[in-house]
Image (cartoon, rainbow, N blue to C red; front, side):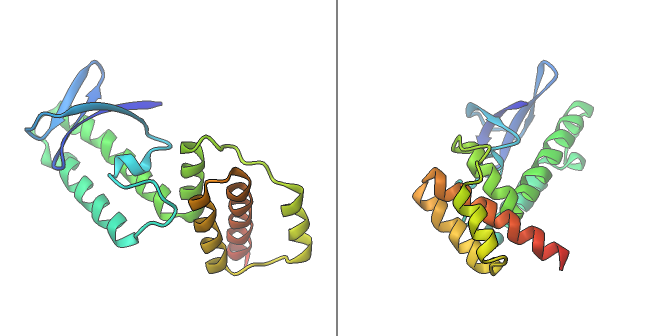
Length: 169
């Protein structure tokens, strides 16, 4: 599902509600399209990167939620539209907070989804059944910086495995 937004300025947004545009702010600006599922970075105004500053993520989310909060809108139409946008901001925030979901979002953006589990990775599971989470996060960071599909896929599957085993313990 694509969402068409009109980014009017750092403090104002507009978005469609049915066949109408709902404006939150007073400035004029440019149109752009983004996929709400994969462009959580764009929705929150962040550069796509696996290395994400959590304080900056929290700040951008709070700013965006403050701007589009339904209680800040006067008309019924604006309230309805801001509720939709608020829900998408919440989804984007949850996506970027979780390393696994952030990696998936980046892989989709880079056109590397779905990743393929390589035989080398499956063999490494037999040899070393557990990796420290911090080491795995660093490996993901390095892989996304290289933008090599095989490295990213292996780092992603390792992250999935580590997070799954961490939740079981």
